Image 1: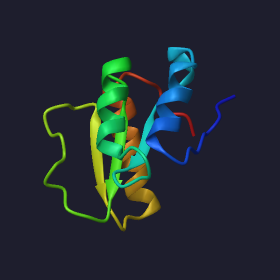
Image 2: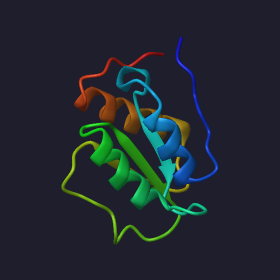
Image 3: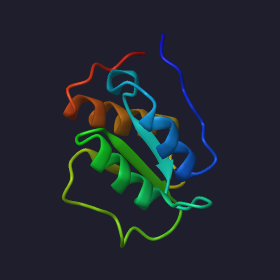
Image 4: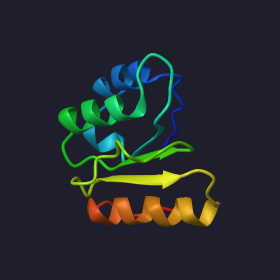
Length: 102
């Protein structure tokens, strides 16, 4: 069984992720603008802790600061539809060699 976790800040997510076995987390989805630690810093820390971990960033703001060189990091501009979210998640998981579970 898989669980979903919703954290209120990037700091909370990093702390939680450090305590999890690597196979228990398939994907990190985060907004770029968050309290205490933004999504870009969260993505940097996750990528450092777990290289290749799929990360999906989203924002309603500009995409100028987006990391583009790392294929394990995706981006969605808000607003988006559920089907666009599903496509982005599926593509990131496929790139990481993780099965897509529906």
